[in-house]
Length: 225
Image 1 (spheres, helix red, strand yellow):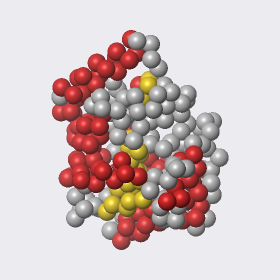
Image 2 (tube, rainbow, N blue to C red):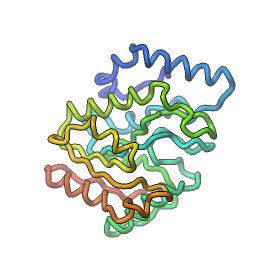
Image 3 (cartoon, rainbow, N blue to C red):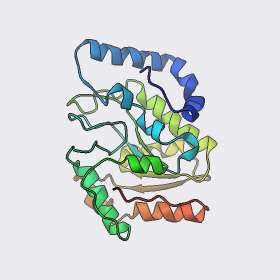
């Protein structure tokens, strides 16, 4: 947890690291390692979403719930996996929707979404770590307080952001977002269990870009190479 965080985020979040919840979270993560559990993503990747997308560069926020818990998958960006790892089912559906929604979009042969993060898409999970092969194992340990703070700070200090909230868990975060200043585009979650009930054909990517353009901002290049 003694990981460097991008400077603009550090200014916004520095007080959080001294709060009791963060101290207990650090102790919990240390204890996990002492007990011999493998934790994903690796320490240097935990804050990747913040490090790739500085506070003042965020245009779009895509909220996930938990990091992937399989070997080599998670690297600190929601829905993203490292190159060489099989593209997970939810991301396959995201690519499927992109190919229907964005003219000329070509489905990439990997699942690394770092290009989006560098374009201004904050790929934020509500929980930033997980025990290997145990989904949800680090929920309720303090991460949600930290990531709710991130959403609240963006809502308060920025204007004209687009929040893509997929599924009930992400949509529950809408209470943190000032909808007079920001746009929420809600849809079902892209997982195979719900994608056909309101994610596919929801056109979130073109709608997000249309909103950015309307506000005088440059659109996101959604093509992953």
